[in-house]
Length: 123
Image 1 (cartoon, rainbow, N blue to C red):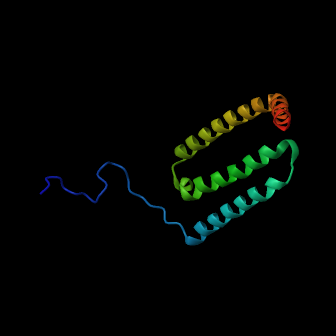
Image 2: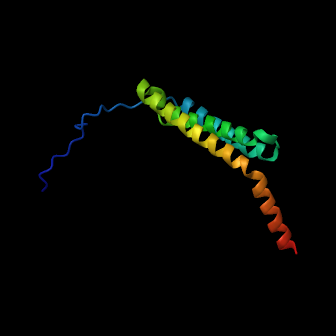
Image 3: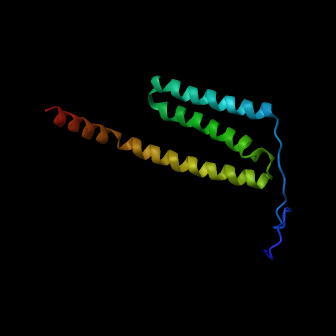
């Protein structure tokens, strides 16, 4: 036999709390995520010009927000945790936007290299 007592209570000092959400909220969130995924696929064929990436990132941000707020129960957390999460997202957005601006700077050179490789392959 084991000397370890099995505890079903929360003895680590963490409060056990569950947020029971109505099924309608969960299904509504799921439906919204499906619609936004369909929208992402549908706008692939549409040319928005210079804002293509921003439209796609905007839809992805809305989807990530829905997941965080409802499926990760961020809506019911303490304000500090919510602020920490939002500041983290802001920094990620900053890093991605700087990376995208830098990648845009080299796009003409990448296009020229790609075109020259395609011409060499065709010959």
